Every structure is written in C-alpha cells, then in structure tokens.
Image (cartoon, rainbow, N blue to C red; front, side, top):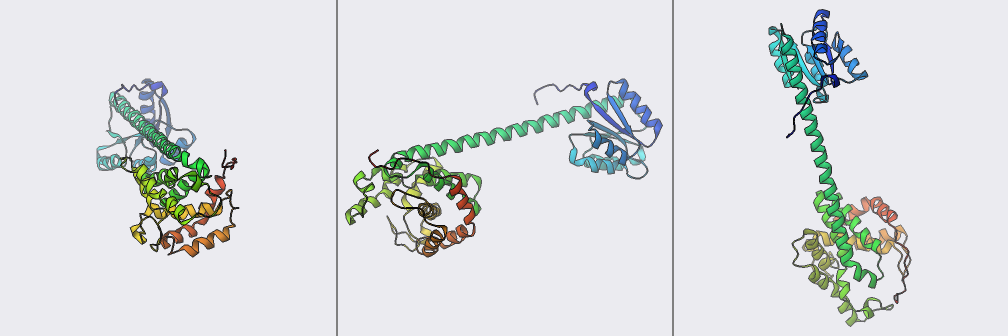
Length: 360
C-alpha cells in the first residue's frame, strides 16, 4: 500500500466469545492490559446480538461451544469480513475445524493453551490486515468513482463536439439544439434495447446528432425555401448525406466514424428506395437505420415553423406504415414495444423557445 499501518489499541473494539467464564476473563485481561476495549459474550446468539447493537473491529472466539459453534459464527459474519476480523481459539482436537474457519474468512487461530504475548501479536496482525483490506477497498471505490467521472467527462466532451459541429447547420435549418440532442438520446435508448454495451451506447448518443451535418453545404435558398423544392433543388438537398460523410470521414475517433456512417446512410430505406446509394435492408448500417427511425419519430412528434406536432396515434401509424418499407421492421417492433421510453425522452427535453424568423 505504500504507507505504514499503525494499530491504535484505544481505538479498537474487540468482542470475546467463549462459553467458559475463566477463558473470557483471561482473554479480557490480556487484551485490556494491551490497551484494547473489550466486550464479552458467552455464546454465538449473544455475540451476534452484541454486534448488532454495537459493531466491533475484531472477534476473538472459541470454536467448540455448546449449541452454535465458532464456525457458525464465522459463517454468519462472512458477509461482513473484512469489516470484522475474526480469530479463532482452538484446542488441538479442533484443528480441522479451525482450518475450515480460515476457509470461511477467519484470519487465523490460536491453540490452547495460549500465551498472552501470542494473543496480542495475533490480534495486532489481524487488525493490520483488516485496516489494509479496508484501505484497499476504499481505494478501489475511489478509483471506480474517478473512472466514472472521467467517463462522464469524455461523454460530455463528445456530446459538446457533436453539438458544436452541427451548430452551423442547425441555425440555418430551423432545427433546435434540443432536437438533435433528443436524436442522440433516442438512439442511445435503442442501443440499450438492442443489448449494446455501454461504450457503443455512448458512441451512438454522440454520433446520431450529427446526421444532418452535411446541410451546412446546402445553399440557404434551398434549405430555407418555404415552398416545394424543384427536382434540381432536391438533387442538391440530397447531397447533404454525402457532404456530411465527407466532413466526418478520415477520423480515428469512433463516434465521428459512426457519425460519418449515419450522415451517409440516414436517408436510405429498408426497401432500397432511399438515397444516396439505394442501399437495402441489412446493407444499411444499423446505426443509420436507428437514426432514420428516431429522426422521423421526433420530426413528426415536434412542432416546427411549418407544422404542428402530430398526436401520438398518428405518429405511431406513420411508423407502422413505414415498417419494412422505410424502416427496419425489427427496430420498429422494438421501438413501438417500448414507446413510453421515447415519449418520456421527448417530454423531458422540450424544444426551447426561439425566434424562427429565417432572417435572424
């Protein structure tokens, strides 16, 4: 551990368990003289009751006692080791049982007849091990907490990178920052439902919001046109998929790599009638299929400058009509079976009020 562990007897509470009063008195005198604070119990039930009322740092127990044995006591305390160190006091006839106690978590055992110095040395060693194990456990907990904090910082940084990357297109396309954030949350929820590991879930949460990043390359006259686009304008608009993939390609960062696949494939359709490549079924990356579905759900469920939000039954009907045509049928079934999760995300992340005048 790197540091010296010092046992301070005055700070240590010991419970002595033995059915013989003379043994209890002898052990209590030895340990009290060494500075330890001691309590006594004459059997296992009283010992367990005493520990419930007031915890001890160490239990020094006889093995052979009427009724419940010292082994029973060790087994009862096993879930609390190393919070409580246990030393057994054994006769030579009970040596085999003493070994079983060690297997159950006891630190050691002392053979009768014992010497006072042996008792003190064994107690001190057991307490040192207890302190080392508790310190190690605390350090493990601190390390785990630090890893969680660093993971959260990485996740937040990735999300910020994604949101900043799309901010230019967002302000030109009337989409809100909350909309693209919801896309990431929906996509992450789908990843969880699919049984993805935490890293994959976090990756798609950061990647999916970048699906429309290519719109930064679409002229304002087309992107903000209030009426129907001409065929030529649609050709230009559809290029936002390839432009988005171009913007994000070549990165060694996993969530940007996934973002490139999503940007390229989120307008592909399950039946092969989508763009830019007319990919069909499983040829469309799973992350793009997920983003396609949740993007349509959010667009239909949200108010925009050109439309009101749709009622839930109409949104569900739209998705059902797209099953096996626009959307991966398995993803549709999974999504609708857990619809409440996605409506909860929508409710918890409402669009912020913003001036939707395209001249602003």
